[in-house]
Image (tube, rainbow, N blue to C red; front, side, top):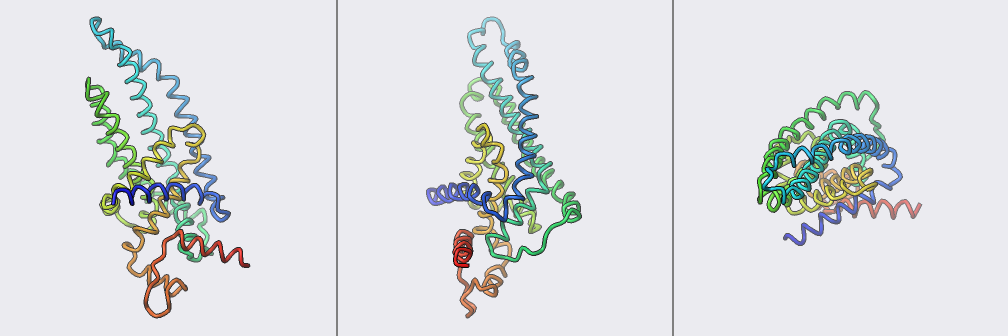
Length: 286
């Protein structure tokens, strides 16, 4: 089970990279990338101005007889501010880019399921949905901040901070990345935040693998510029294959009426990758 979910998490992460290149999605990818670039540059510039001062401040609390561990404290301080950078970046990116990510998730879902995309979202639709999306981002913040704060405080405990906390921080980041990006298709379907968390936890290895890969890319220069739309696309494909049938009992029936079934009431269960392959084959045959 674990190996299967690990492999699936990797597949959805790679599929996100493929989806952002699809012609019908490119224009919806541009805005999240621009927001990502501006935020990364701004937060990184602020971090560079403070990282040295913060490290020296942390070392100043070390008594003279412990000078020999000052370099460890210095390294820990740098790691801590990098973690803060990661948290602040994700928080700001979530609030600012939420409306655009929600639209991207909707477009990806329509593409993968073969639903009609003739209805275009206008500026008024975006404005109307923004308050709901921002409330959802606040729920994510309330859920994540106490955990982040507890791990951050424990990171200064000698021994524990250098051994146990780093892997726990990685797991925390992976889980929050899965929640952050899988939440967009869930929210588009008005599924509550609590229900979404419980459903993600049922496939924890799958979502931790996907979220872990996204978290790692956040720290890779230039790759982190485009990781947000990649994560939204991959998470939406994951939603279509694993969670949409549970959220919409009529999904398979509707798929059958659209030509995805066998016409006899027996539904052909197909994943988003199969639908996409068939759509591409149809495009080539025209």
